Picture 1 (cartoon, rainbow, N blue to C red):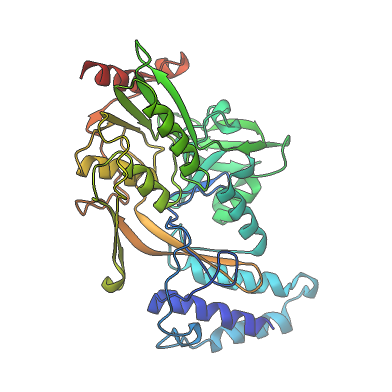
Picture 2 (spheres, one colour; picture 1 turned 45 degrees about the horizontal axis):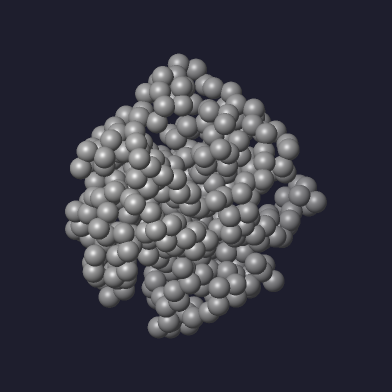
Length: 423
């Protein structure tokens, strides 16, 4: 059974690594779930990142994926030695052996966004996409082999405790993160509502590690909030926390409200937005852009699979001046919008340089409920710019200093509102 299940998974991996071909299927079947994992993990949490439910047809069956199969005799020899000679036979767990072998194979590509998830991890991952979470509410990723905070969710336990973008989580409850896989670290950080986790964090500019004791909570993520600001309440302030299943519906309601009011400009706040579905980001961008324009380009290993995603010509807000606020916690889908606004020259991007995640992932559900999440493309802005590992440089740089943050003064938002009122 172990041999057969390993062979099945290897076929899937070979298929993606060597052939990059897809087969049709349903969202929760044994087949493809396409998500542009244009984001990180939110405390586990993947705001993650994508083209939702677009299923590409297969050119060959999975079993024919590998043109030159690996010689697995070494693997079977090691497994046989382990099974026959390891001193503690009680410690030998077939499922642990299977998942450990698969994770080692997947980790060998050295890509933090390409991961194998056990059935339990897959359930947690899906919960993050659905916006129902228990944890600290911080979006995490691996950067330079370090567990790094992309952004704390606004009002989350991590945010209220003082966790910041760029923080490196060094220990969790006293255990070194370096001794854990990404998912092990995330699962150790996550936990039941009301329980406490102790994080040891290394922060740039601090001479010693920082200690945080954070009480976990149920994280309810509201995607879109709308307020009216400025001297005459004539500047619409739209904050989007992530690009999830509910974001379009919430955004459409906000757009209708804006159209019914006397508005002279819009601030679109994507700070600390770690990403979400690519197609949702494109649809939201479309309301700010006139006509059919290139929104984002995806490039695959096989150039024949490259795609251009266009705005949908809705343009409901196209006549209103626009400022997009970003910072180091803006990633993936947020960067798609920021990069497109710059390239299409509709409005300006203001704030701080963004995170820099320009890759595309897909997820395939496997027969036992586990799943494979794999990078299959890079995405580019309309002017064919890659922001991967670079980020988007704002048109107008506005830093946030410690004094302003301590006194709850939002210099970036104030600058954006003043800019729009002066037009």
